[in-house]
Amino acid sequence: MTLPFAERMSGHAWTVLPTARDLVLRPHLAAFFEHTIPVVDDRFGPGTLSCALAVPDGATDVVVLVHGLGGDRRSPRVQRAARELHELGMATLALDLRGADRRGVGLHHVAMVDDLVAACRSPLLAPFRRVFVLGFSMGGHLALQFAAVGGQPRLSGVAAVCAPLDLAAAQRHLDQPTLGFYRHWVLRGLKAQYAAVARHHVVPTPVAEVRRVRTFHDWDRLVMVPRFGFASVADYHARCSARTVLPRLGVESVLVLAQNDPVVPPELALPWVGEARPGRLRVCVVGRGGHLEIPRGVDLGLGHSGGGVVQQLARHWRASP
Image 1 (cartoon, helix red, strand yellow):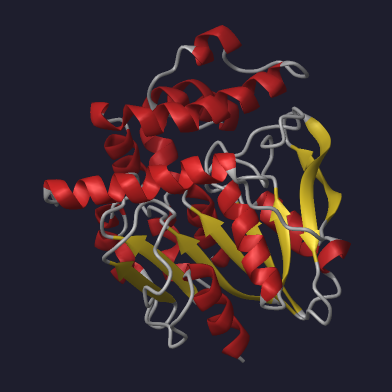
Image 2 (cartoon, rainbow, N blue to C red; image 1 turned 180 degrees about the horizontal axis):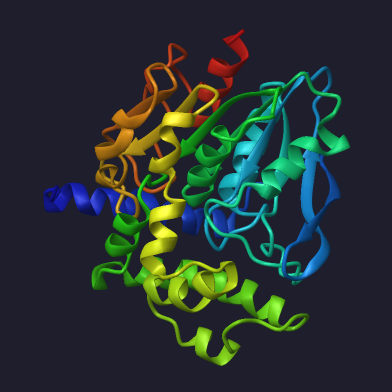
């Protein structure tokens, strides 16, 4: 669907301007503790994931926050969400997925749930009665993948904000020439993660060649496919798209989309939402906002209006059994 020019520009403004604001006035959470979680990479061996745990007094629920592609636990939207959840009495674990902290532990792909499994099984989260997962952009895609994994008895809900459900459709959309600014921004972070791994391990493609990548198709072809043993980019997309796990969602999952989002427009998700089991996926499409930025006061339809997306999700989760 092609949006009118004014709506397209509104979506870009809601995406770019808050990002610029957060780069200048970065949100910070006052009370948190840095930790690590051990993992074993199938190619690079033992390592740790960096994370930050914040626990307000009396918190019994914890939300694992998952950054987007090329980002990390210090991403402004992750930090802002942590602060908002802390104010509502919910603990947060802001997690760096494998490689995101640039320490060379390894790389992750957007269906690799191992790091979320490790986080939920960590002693850090043992004191909490319930665990929720909130993911942003491709972190939301991963959160939905995690919702389909069994053996997580305390997992009580997940939410994905501005996440696609089909990787092939997302790659074609994001590789359009008109989205070069966003593509460069994300690829810059991904290349830094890859270079960090290359400083410690033998990597499948020379760093110099990866640095020349200008599209997500080439990133997947040169990095994801050889690293994880996929037959091709098409094979990676087909096997790892979140739409394939919708029939297996084990907990209530919420997908929040913005009609004017220039990075992940709703058409990258809506054609597949009907594949979820009844009652397992709640889809909220709002008429205002951009990528990962939705104005406060926009009602998600969860029965807890007022405030922003994170506050409404938190109230919804706290009211659930």
